[in-house]
Structure formats: structure tokens, C-alpha cells
Image (tube, rainbow, N blue to C red; front, top):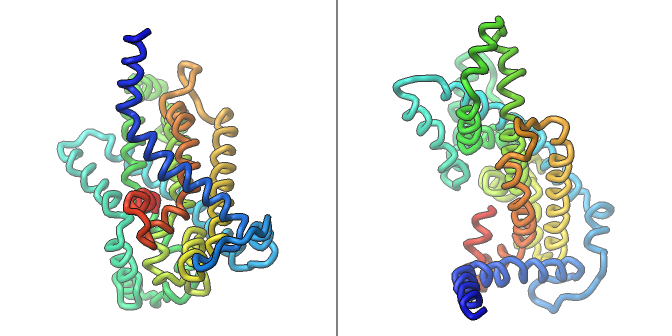
Length: 341
């Protein structure tokens, strides 16, 4: 008993930094954020309990909130499939035998390392400016310049293009999945006269379906929390005409520009609910389109189930973590919030 207790205490001692950090910087801020979502709070006066008024206001008295929700859903439903499709396309190209394949993989992964940074967002804004390279190329082909910052649809397309450009992490996971598909299957299909498309739809996609599910869940969660590109490109305004007013950007404006901390906390919890519903739908529908050779759940599927809950709940602590960073209450939550942004 004594030896077993000592072993357990040793284990608890090693994991105590994580437990303390999780309680102090994730669980407790989440509980406070949930409380604030039922209050009217502007940082300068004590929170005043107002019940569900913040939640009711979102869908009945705030057209801009509904608009930001529509823009975000459009961004997710268009951007995530395009990003995954492009990542799979590049992964299949890099899965071929080539002497320079290592260099190519590094080159294609580089945008993901710097893709979400402020510098790249500024670069992207210059590329799509009136005198940028995109309008220059359009002019070379005799097409008129496009006012990317004057048209709401064009501005959102610009953000989606930036998200597709950051395909490196998904590409690497697809590449690992393609490496696990036996070449004998393709050889047997070739002997039977199967075309490239038939092999792709009958062999590649079914055997890659669990990897597709993993990428889809992770990229969907990431897309819902997109903030930096929209903030930099629109200079924090969400323009033109709220065309780039993503959910996270509108939450940030409510919290730090209008000091509506209670309302912003309610928005954060609604976002948590939305991400949970989207993830649940993907999990539920996966039974009909995800294929497992052994009939058991694959490693990515188990990883999603074990880590998904913590990822979703961590996003709920986004608002309070941002508060701590903005007002300098603590440095540790700031770093944690920055990781989600």
C-alpha cells in the first residue's frame, strides 16, 4: 500500500503543473466566462445579473451579430472543403517518387508555418491592393482591376484564398495517410484495367476517409476561430460593409472596443455550442462514409474523441483569456489565448 501510494504520488507530482494550469487558466476562466454571459458588465462597474438577455439580444436585437454568423458559416463551408481538396491534391503529387520530393514537401509546408502571422496578413493585403500583383496579372490578360477592399464578396474571397494557402498541415497528414495505402492495391487495380479516377474513388478515398474526417474536424474548429487575417486585412473594422466580419472579430470588437464583456462572453459560449454541434454532426455522419479496414476505429478517430472535448471547451475560455492579455492581469493566460487566436 505504501509503495503503491508513493508511485501514485510521484505520478501526480509530475502531472501537477498541467492540472494546476488547466484549473487556473482554463476551467476557472470558463466558469467565470459562463457567469459573465448572464450579466451586463463593462469592466468599470460590478457585473449586473440580467439572465438570458444577452442570448436573446443576439438573435432578436442585433442584426450585425446574425450577419457575422452568416459570414462565418460561409467562410467555413467554402474555405474548409477548398483547403482540404487542395491539400489532398498536393499530397498526391508529393506522394510520387522524385529526387527532390523532400525539398518540395518543405517548400509546400512553409506557408503553414508563417501562414497565420500578422506579417503574412499584411503581405496578403498588399497583394490584393489596387496596385498589387493580382490586379497586375488581371490587367495583363486584359481584365479590369478588382476592388478587393470595396466589394464584400471579393474581400471574403480574399480571406478564403488565404485560408486555402495555409494547407501545409493538412497536406502532411494526407501524405502520411497515402503512405499507409498498400501499392499492391493499385497494382491489382491496374492489372484489371482500372483508370486513374476509378482507383482514386474506389481505393484512395475509402482508405483515406478516416484521415479526411480528422482533417475536416480540426480544420472546421480552426476556421470558426479565425481572427488574425480578418482583423489585419480589414484593419479591425470587418469591412467593407461588414463583408469580413467573422464571428471572432465581432466578439473581439464587442469585448475590447465597446466594453460589452457580458455580451461577448455570451457570444463565446454560443460559438462553443456551434463548434460542438458541427463536430457532433461530423462524428454522427462519419459512420456512413468513413471506412475502417479492421472494422475498428482508427487512431485519428480515437485521437479526436479523446482530445476533441478538451479542444472545444478550451475555445470557451477564449474570451476571458483575451481579457487577461488585454488588461495585463496575467501573462500565462495571454499566451494560452494567443495560441487559439
